[in-house]
Length: 221
Length: 221
DNA sequence: CGATTGCATTTTGTATACAACATGCCAAAC
DNA sequence: GTTTGGCATGTTGTATACAAAATGCAATCG
Image (cartoon, rainbow over all chains, first blue to last red; front, side, top):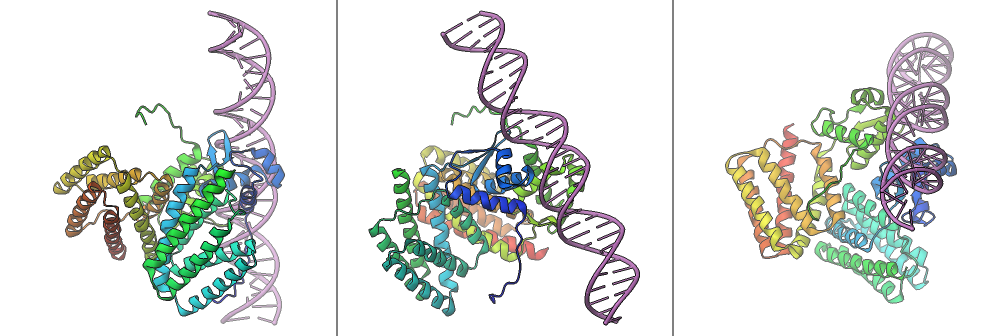
């Protein structure tokens, strides 16, 4: 990785449509359970029905839509059980990710992670939630990258995308936030001594806590 | 579940096309790396290009095809690293599956598994490889079902489908086969005493052995 | 009054014509 | 001789017309 990436990426029309729909779903513009009328949507997006249908298929593969034969597509409505199941799998994958990362982490990676950790603590003390989420994601992505298993990364990302449709961010109580930051400190420490087993444990526990927070948010709504 | 299922399932045209393509890929009729010409394939399948394209999108989501913009679809060619990575993730998921299954297994499940185990041993002593594979798969599916996490099942199935494109079955050396059967016995034993940790270990080890066998087959070819 | 059947309307599914793009070849320029 | 530009050809991408299926409503029958 040398950082210089000159590749220009033109999105294909179906990709662009899928991208747009994805944000519409995640931002709640298209509510869970909503039926998507092809003609209407194609007009709203300024795209004909053919590429829109391909976008539907992509989003269905992501688990963001379900397609019923002859009855079109609708936005998935996740049950609390779905969320529990997804987190169960994600915890396992994060654990694996941590174990692999501990085995492969380089000093250079470590410097980067420390920097991110500092950034996170600053966001925390500033009560800057958006920055916190951004850095949080960056740290987890970084660990995932260090693990060096693209299939793991992709599998995890897919599950994560599904859950994003919940928009559970926003209400994070103080004590949980403090705890999460502390857990991140522990993660970096475990990585520093390359203790894969401990890192796995921390990550699994971390996700369990997150699941609880998400379930509480869901119940509130 | 009452067993009586009257639902008739008509596959949609894209689904049917995808199904057909899937077997063509798995059976090697469409070789890894092969480019799929839309017009030609649509004629061979007796389907127009529109549903065929939707089938492409589904298979691309499964990871069986890659789609390059304006350059069509081609069958993925898995590298040994891809296989290693996939197995790494699958081992983790199987482990989780075992852990969950041990916590939830009922006596009735257990009777079924014992029956399958007996069937497997018979196939083994008959040197009946096809039956062995069938029962093997049934056992793993059963454990997965007992685990009771549909998202886990689906995630696992997706990864498994990708690997099936390799067609690594066939040459299984005697010692490995003996070992695999013994491992299955251990699995059932671990389930019997609901020892999730041990079941996890066995499953992870089991998959590691399978990976070795697959890599050897790949190198031979 | 309730259930059922047929019809009208809406919506999705498929085929196909046309547009945009990629690719390979050849000629011209340097 | 190598590179560049233009053209011809084939292949993918998109829009749209038409077919098939579902849905809602009203009329009819019990």
